[in-house]
Amino acid sequence: MEAMLNEWIWQEEYWLPPGIYWRDIEIEEDDGRFPLPRDLIYTLPLAVAFIAIRYVFERLIAVPLSKRLGVKDRIRIRAVSIPKLEAFYKQNNRQPLQSEVASLRKQCGLSERKIQTWFRHRRNQDRPNNTKKFCEASWRFVFYLVAFTVGLGSLINAPWLWDHRECWRGYPKQPVAEAHYWYYILELGFYLSLLMCVSVDVKRKDFKEQVIHHIATIFLVGFSYCANYVRVGTLVMLVHDSSDFLLESAKMFHYAGWTKTCDSLFVIFALVFLITRLVVFPLRVIHTTLVVSLEFFQPFFGYYFFNALLLILQALHIFWAYLILRMVYKFVFLGKVERDERSDEESEVDDEEEEEAEDEGDDRTWEQRKGAINSKLASLANNCVLNNLTNQRNINSRLPKAR
Image (cartoon, rainbow, N blue to C red; front, side, top):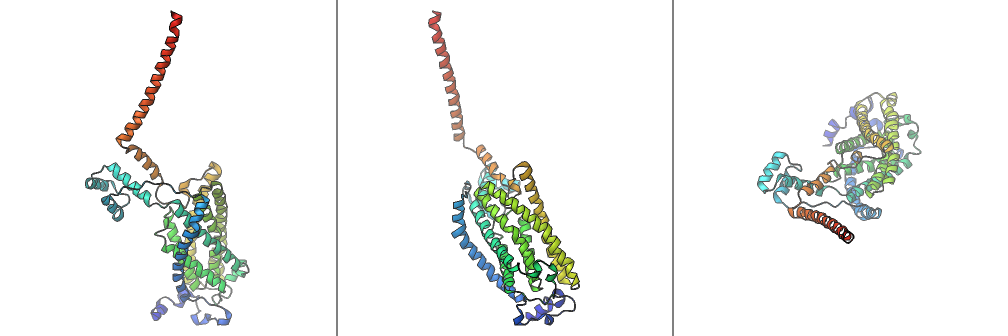
């Protein structure tokens, strides 16, 4: 296995500039740590540990905090137990086609409207409530805040934070500090845990973009570590963490119903996001990897692959910036933020609940309708009786005078 890896994967032309071999970049233990691909194995158990820590955090800290902040869950009607519809829902489709509804109508003996209403109730039943979304946002907020603080503390005295040419001076024979090593391992382990939990987390409108972002980030962090792009990689992670914790904090207050605090945090997040992702990231980070790096070595496979991943991230930044600018425009000029443009809303349309309420009005039993009609008729009758009595009293009061 090791011979196959060395022959197919760890070839020098993939990872190192032309004319440099693995033996040329060996670093003595006294000089510091040199990034080795086997170090990334530790990220797998670390990702599992993150999932376990998240489970404990959400139940012991996030749930009590959500109650203290006033997070309220919407009460949803549970679907009546119908085995045939339940089997179709789990095995085939959550939103049946018209032909499938007709087939289910024959099997269950229910009307098409009742079947469609049942599926709406069942989908709403599986929707995550505000408490679940609050717990997820609070977990990410804590990690991004800690990661940004640790990353900034470890890089504040690093020369490549201020002079980006230092990212390539002496490359690829650059030792890695212990703090930067753990910064890398923790970030990679966290994004692996997010990818493992993507099937159980809240599915958002930008679900596909989020999955692409996680995969690109994992490849970017892993490849940059193996190719010793650690100095640039730390800058990329710091730029991303600088705005992520602001977004998660805005989500937390959004679920808690603190509208003014949420909107204020969102405006701050939008400013930081637009500056870091559309100005700092392309003009400083991507520029140094595309242009400045060529002053120190000739292009090779790692150069093209690394920059391709960075450009994918930048494309996602532009996509999210477009959504953010739309929200900022509506917030500033229209005085409101449309909920369907927030990145933390589910992918399914929330209007289903409104449609559900209308259908419930249409599907009410005859007894309920009859009761409502009787109450209205009684009210009308009382009004008519009162009017008649009033008129009668007026007539009686006039009779003595007439006599």
